[in-house]
Length: 267
Image (cartoon, rainbow, N blue to C red; front, side, top):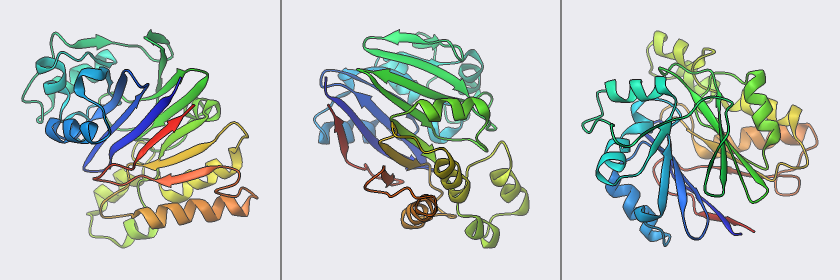
């Protein structure tokens, strides 16, 4: 079975990922416009009719912008925890409230969606409720941790299971410190329920690298406090300091904020 992964957008302005086979797939978050989602999918030979579900990580606008349209106008089931669903329908960005498309899932309780075995798990962030996803398909394990303030033992458990890992590297510490954000916002971002910085992500990976981990994608990069080259270089250097060579021991990609980062295919 050929497994395909595509990042449609990954940043503080909008997030959306596709994971699928040649016949169908799922979206993880839908924080960009439906027209953009449809256009990008079409560019890669995909269509909305192939999407079996949207999995939502939390109720912040940059992750849910299109879920109302996808769920209620296109009939695509929208999966998340009951708490996240309540937060979604209270969000200012939800002009189309979810009703018929609502599907509940529960943390640490796997369920099957065609060939996908999906497990939601707790991550520390400041949405109404917050989850990462571990998705197993055809013997491959994908873990998605898009917004989290720190790596808890639960989050670590799913990172260590992954063959393919999408993990946040939101900000550079010095850029955040010296940047224009007000102090309260800097505190929120750097706090335990905020976001991961490049260095913390890199140090965890360097200390916990395992042979089964083939590819790491750095996601949810800040527009104002990071850039892809800096995130990549920070992680690459810290991995190298622990004897892990990018390109040999593991593949590393910093995802683009507003544009697709190519289609990856795995046999």
